[in-house]
Image 1 (cartoon, one colour):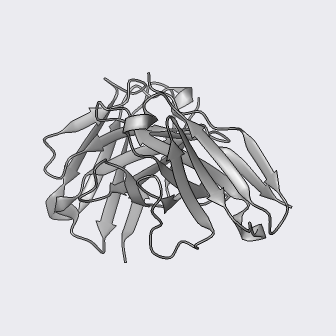
Image 2 (tube, chains in turn green, blue):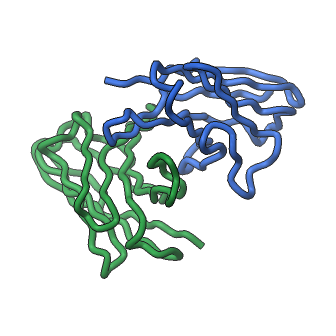
Length: 121
Length: 107
């Protein structure tokens, strides 16, 4: 069974930093791209950043470029999201998701349950 | 930036057919994916590559695409299908894009 478990969320002040983690199990982690998606309270889904299986190819949404950094540790079956210079508008549930393998496009096929990040003074 | 447009809401009675549209200028040459998100839960993939159902997804869910408009159809909607639905595609530059979401009410 594919399992993705996020951690690291919490309350942080504007301008602060937070590092999210996502531990994967139930599949061969080092052959899948991984992605972070967020959802502000009462709002829709927003694609944030993806990373290739080896970590050499990274894409980042303009809304977080220069502030958020995705990384992975294949030895620990984990993907991370380093969030710096946090703003109130970054308040959201952050989901980690696996990207499908062998498809014509990259798309999330399994999702974690999410971790809540609240940016407030 | 690339955008996908969905209607905010759709209402149907149990047993009726619900249709949710997703329009985007690039959809004529890209695939569309659909996710169901129940309240307080993570999204679940219900359609991939325009019209394919993952294992475990009921046959009443189907997808189609014509030109720049994709459609998710729920045939014989059930109360359990009451959820938010999101379309998804890629922008051709390595980034994903979600539609704004459609709240389907089955009542």
